[in-house]
Length: 445
Image 1: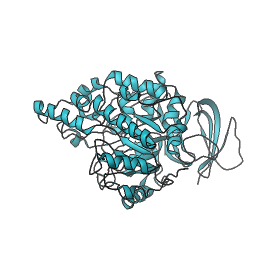
Image 2: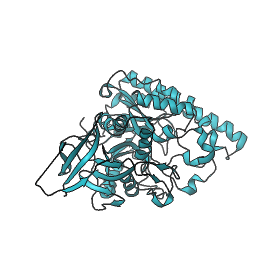
Image 3: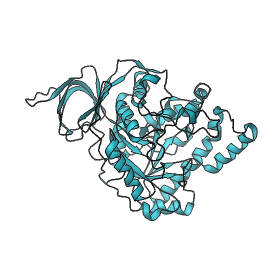
Image 4: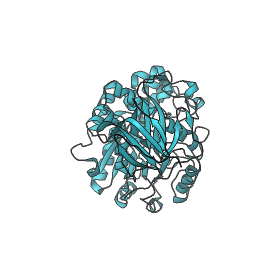
């Protein structure tokens, strides 16, 4: 295993920014100082003028394996993630088959151990009928429990209220939820199908999957969490109204109810459907400019705790279908960090806050062992970024298996040059180390 000495980097960590060196040995950060010298044999990387960031921990991705590998797989998407500065991902259970038994969950861990370029964990999927199996989930080796309270696949919609309360009452693990009210969505969809048939205009997506649908479901989940004392984490908020349900007057570690926002809800608005069409069709839907502004405000004032991608690729052929059969979701892991750094350059978010939301807080929230920070003794999951190296997203440089991105044609001013995973240089200026794989996460619970 190689050792590395990163020199003269602008280190962003724990709300501080300073120029210094980092020594990497035996997978971990050995030393952080202003001027490190060593007689040991190390590879020296001069990072003058570059940011050194802790790797992005993406707490919500869909890498489509097993069962949907025509869209993506763990190898292709984790490779794209490494190029995008994501050193750790938590993948969701709605693959085929759904990861709703311990055996099926472990099958995914086996696949990742052989193919993932970055570190990984998976969520166990709850259903109306698998509580006994759910309670076997090991809190020290599995990220958490995922419940679809809307927009489910397979049999994963948990819509039985008695079962839902029992799940919330029975586990101390983090319960992450997709919150959209199915009854509201069905009524809206039937209304517009009556007018347009299957060819509903794409700009009506946020009207069908409405603010009301999101708020009804999120508020019910929070009410149940308060009633039962459950540890609830609500994924991908998409409305300003929902942000009013969360608090920022206590530290993250003391919160029982937390929230995540995803890149697309911070970047796009309903005005973009005319140009982007189904390429920005997600569930929950991209909504209004006012919603986007409200989400930014809540992220900055700490009502929203985590920034993620909800990376969910589909093929271009699938996305070209009429509204009712065009799937929701899009690929984001390669471009999320550079997109957020663009907002840093625009003065929307301080870089220290971006690192907090993308790296520190996911590690704190999920209690991930020795990751998410630039600290001595922690795993060297690190990213070097050149803040003055403009590039444009194009078909030729997209790494997703699906071959497209909602950011095609966008020019970013920052570019990732190096990504370290467990002290290994996995990505180096466009080249990958295909011989080293990431590790399964462990949790200090």
